[in-house]
Image 1 (cartoon, rainbow, N blue to C red):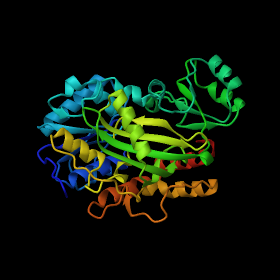
Image 2: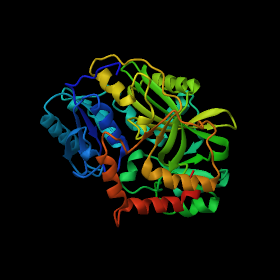
Image 3: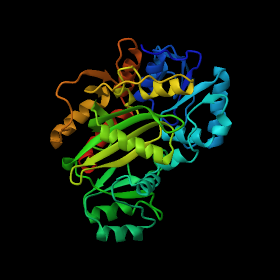
Image 4: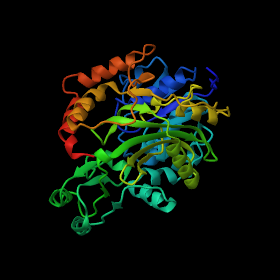
Amino acid sequence: MPFEADREVPALIVKFGDYPLHHGGVGAIRSLGRLGVPMYAITEDRCTPAAVSRYLTRAFVWPTTGTEDPGRLIEGLIRIGRRIGRPTVLVPTDEEAAVLIAEHQSDLFGRFLFPPVQPGLPRRLASKQGLHELCVEHGIASPEAAFPQSYDDIVDFAEKARFPVVAKNREAFVRRRRPAVGGTTRIATREGLLALARDWGERPGVILQEYLPREEAEDWIVHAYFDRDSTPLAIFTGVKVRSWPPHAGMTANAYVVDNPELADLAARFIKQIGYTGIIDLDLRFDRRDGQYKLLDFNPRMGAQFRLFESESAVDVVRAMHLDLTGRAVPEGEQRAGHRYVVENIDLPALLAYRRSGYTTPHAPKRPSGTELAWFAGDDPLPFLTMLGRFVRPGAKHLHQLWRANRRGSATS
């Protein structure tokens, strides 16, 4: 290892909501834990994969929904900070946590360490409308979009739109409440849009976007960490081979692919908006006009962040811990050709993609190495716990996979 982490400064995985099978949190626990950093995590119960990792010092069982009053969540974080008893790096795994930390920095300062981001910026970036407005402001390509305020607006849109179109929830947080649509939804016809929209209420919280045909597009990922001057201390690019639900959900299989043009595009955008911290970007390269179009900006660690590691053994979580503890982040090229597989969702994704005939042009034929999301020889219990929760009778995860597969042909 070409560097040493500060083992006197622990880290806390911060997650809000009920999603116990989160491989990103397990990856962060292992990444820093293998360096000797004391690791803590907020978990739904004591039998989640994260809670049983050998690298976890302690799990703080705190069931949440993500819809709690922010003051209550901050009080809970402060109580956890008191129990840890020393300044701790915060590692958010969802938008709710990232936005909460950013907007309540003054309450958390001194007890916790986190990037000093502009307080309102993560919320704006996590919002589909806020992100689109920033892209327009700074000349970053993104899909054409409309933000209807009423059913009449949707009727007007339907008269002029070129179908299919894509519907998404406007704000990232609505998935914890009553979302208008169940994730990214491809709508094939005017009649289909109007029928769906009847259930969206008087003020539909949706964004309607142009559809970027999968046969004319490539899905790319950028993960990076930026210091307080919005300078990238670690930046990585890769291609998404498969996702679940198909073409619209979380990464199931991906490769590291060098793309200096895309890395430069991301770095320039971050500099323009003045962001600091970890980013996880989803972009779609539109071969029709040769542009990378920004689809999603996650102002936090992405679940698949362990796809990316430099030759100096730096990933974005390690870069953040090193930077926030005053240590240099060693330079190093990314491990081109490396593959990442999420075991429990890649098999159904593979079956769905075979039916669709979709292939990824830039995926190398022979990976230089493979990182599994769940299984690790030095830490097997998270994998076994995931299997137990995933396949047990009545488990909602299998039902969710089945439903997503049923509607896979309708998503983009």
